[in-house]
Amino acid sequence: MITIMKGAGSLSRKLTAILLSTAMLTTGALAADNSIYVDQSGSGASVAITQDGFGNVVRGVQPIQGGDDNTVSAKIYGDNAGVTINQVGNQNKLDISMVGSTMNGYQAPAVNYSVTGNSATAIIDLNGDGQNSFQSSSVNVVQVGDNAGVNIKMIGGRDHVNIATAGGSSNQVNVNLSGGDSSAAISLIGGGSNTASVNMQGGNSVGIKSDGASNTYTINQNGLNSVSIGGYASGDSMVGNSNSVTIGQTGNNSVALGMTGSSNTVNVTQNNTTSDSNILNLKINGSSNTTTINQSNHN
Image (cartoon, rainbow, N blue to C red; front, side):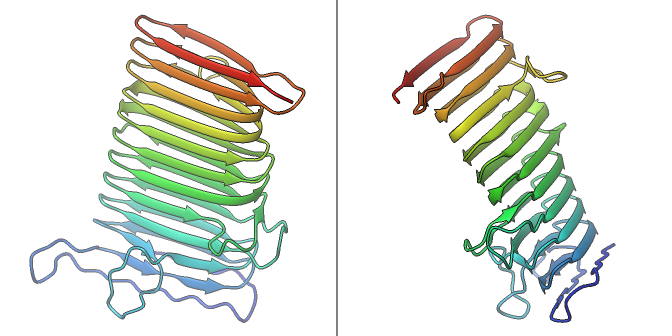
């Protein structure tokens, strides 16, 4: 089932959507059950997509009719857009790019994405042309399954990312935020061998909740920085063995890190370039853990 809704707005808006429903190619290779190609322009758009099947795809209009290029992103041009995408099934693909029409405005787009199934991949880019910057935008992602990957890029300020991955292993989360007063909240629960990578520019905060073994977390921040990983924030925890956490901060820095488990590795580097101090609160419960901390203050 696929539902697409357009909100009232500019007459210049266009929406192209093509649904392909086929179970198998003549060669016997599995094809996408459901594919949607989107290219829309105009402000105040509302797009809702639900796909249930194998290898569901949301992407851009193909340069060649009948093409199968997953590097072409679905494009939505305009301000104040709302996009909700639900995919159910294995090997789902999402590639979407949103572009604002004004510089440093308050376009506040919102993307809500949920996926249930294994081997899903998603790219969400809230500044596809690199020219303008959304502000006060939000991306919310819920992943259930194994081997899922989500890549999020946002440019602006007061942006918010919430990612919840549950009940799976070998999932990957990559977040790149540029702009001040933004936040990323990531929850990796269940399974193991999950990876989270966060790169942020500006005055930003990161919160991570984790439960599982052999997970890897890498956080790099430049600006007015704060990180909270389990053990301190109410309801948060980081439990498991053989986890690896690497944090690099430049600017005005603080870290609160709480871990329960054994054979974990923690590396924290803080370089303060202001008159404020580097702050690290570290609480670890377990055996055979390794911690390396480097702090410098030059202002």
